[in-house]
Image (cartoon, rainbow, N blue to C red; front, top):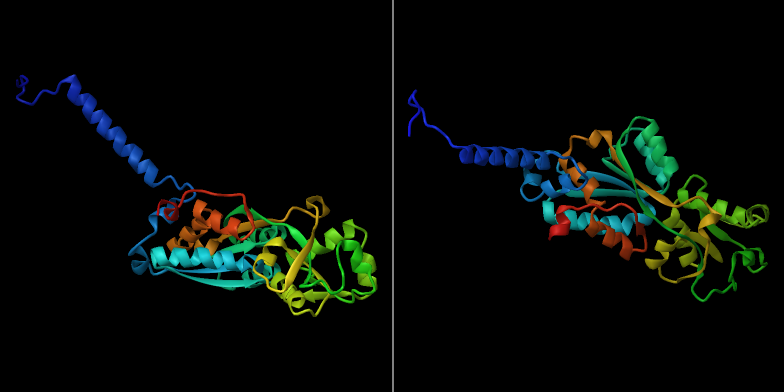
Length: 291
């Protein structure tokens, strides 16, 4: 039936159908642009990397995370084609590089202090606490000096004790833990401390038997040979060991970098970190999780 003006007449059912279609379109658009963590990683895949001029990610990561981050990067590159360059070292050294203008898209710090330094300089776009870890006392295989507890670090059989550098997070945690036990001043006074540039360098002293003991993260022992963990420091002996993940401002418009930032928070990445001995605190859904 035509209306008096000759135009088609729609019934209420047709109007309802149109309304539903419009609402569904709006909802789909909202889902595409929600900006929730993980959306970027899910969207960035396949041939997009080849078309994207910024399809290379530069990551500055705490030395203790290097194996896990490398595995997550390998999977990310395999899926997306975007290359990931990983620069590992002490969180303090990496932060200073970033503060001095070194190119980096993502920064993973082993403590809040150095992540704060980057943020306070106006260089951080986003950040989140990603992981936690534990601090342990380690000795060379066979424990030749007979170290079984922190008190044994005062034994005459112990001449050298390895800890990370004064500004390295592992060194900061180690000093505070030994201070809480009333041992730090005495050990330092006897000239027994040997500093490593980062926690992996510290671990290497123990592996090679150049020191009788060392303080490192529990995760480092998992990748070490010729090393035994003989004591775990209580959590309240030092400030919480928190790894802070930062997306740097220079990377805000770089799709590959934003995608990898999300990828490190994904459930699949959390499993990699957990297998390495970390305790993930932040997980979201990423493209990897749907594979």
